[in-house]
Image: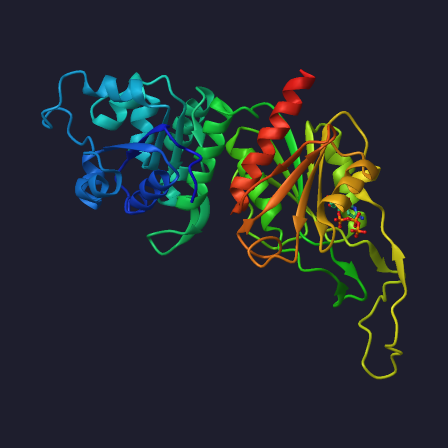
Amino acid sequence: MNGSLDGRTVVLGVSGSIASYKAADIASRLVQTGARVEVALTRAAAEFITPLTFRALTGRSPYVDIFRDGAEGEAHVELARRAELLLVAPASASTLARLAHGLADDALSLTALATAAPVLVAPAMDSQMWEHAATQANRALLAERGVQFLGPVSGRLASGRTGAGRMLEPAAIVDLVRARLGREHGDLAGRVIVVSAGGTREAIDPVRFVGNHSSGKMGYAIAEAARDRGASVVLISSAALAVPGGVRLVAVESARDMLAAVQAECAQADALIMAAAVADYRPAEVAARKIKRAGFDARSVDLVQNPDIVATVQGDFVKVAFAAETDDLLANARKKLVAKGAHLMVANDVTATDAGFGVDTNRVTILDTDGGVDELPLLSKYEVGQRLLDRVVSLLGARG
Ligand code: CTP
């Protein structure tokens, strides 16, 4: 986890549902991401999961019964004022109804009525309740008022049936909270950042390809960090990793697919960050059918050169490239900075075992066009992404 929610106050409203227990996981993830978490439970929620669980996870006493908890009269208003975001997860059908109609008869609904913070709801209920006209009318009313809905999704329900009404998974909910707080407070709010990731795959035949060791982790970590700072993030990827919530994926395979996607997405971009390990060569011909062992002359596969994506794509955006090197790191990286017309070049020694391919940490040096050399220590890839984005933010600021 990381400190992307450091210092932020999130009020977690928990209503009564068979998914109430998952709110403990949400609270824990928010705390681990640095947030100060205050919990408001409905009485029904307290039947499913105890306040003690939340007190242990957040270090703070949850609000349950505002008329009995000994809190001063204005406690709910205080909580509503402190909130920078109110997340209701799970949101039951009756809690959605209370919120839609402005009822204020428990700590959760009182806080919702009194807060000026963004309200995000993650519904959880049986599909018949979710699809009922009353719930749909409440959903429409809340959405019209600016409440952001996170799910529900289709899947297995507590009743054993499959249908719409299942709460989004806690990790996905926390991702969307991070994205929203980024848009409210982040220095990349309103910006479009395109990130490429992973090693491209150049087909030999329908089952084989020429590839490389890139895992895509660096690009995914940059995408996550840019999302946390409020950017609209497009991730153009050939990797098979889980896509960070709130990030738009454009899946590609080959270098030529990636070029087409980068060109299309960069038309609206403020920055392009090329973390992908693009194959420089591809087989000259792709066999339409699987090449059989017998009868194949396997001594050679003819290769032709791929386009250089970062050098080809032009436009009014900040261009960041990576230099994966095994020798003469800085000299080669400086040459690439110039040759590719990049504003920043991230030099990466791929022979190090704690940095580069497949691991969660990286040690890079950032070169700029003024001759600046910023040697960063060994950091998590997420933190490398944050440091790199600091530089992108200042370049964007200088452009106005
Ligand atoms: N890159 C690209 N298109 C290619 C090859 C690389 O856009 N066909 C981008 C990479 O995404 C990276 C930068 O160019 O941001 C440098 O990639 P790298 O593999 O280090 O350099 P190459 O240009 O391929 O040079 P060499 O293989 O000779 O080191």
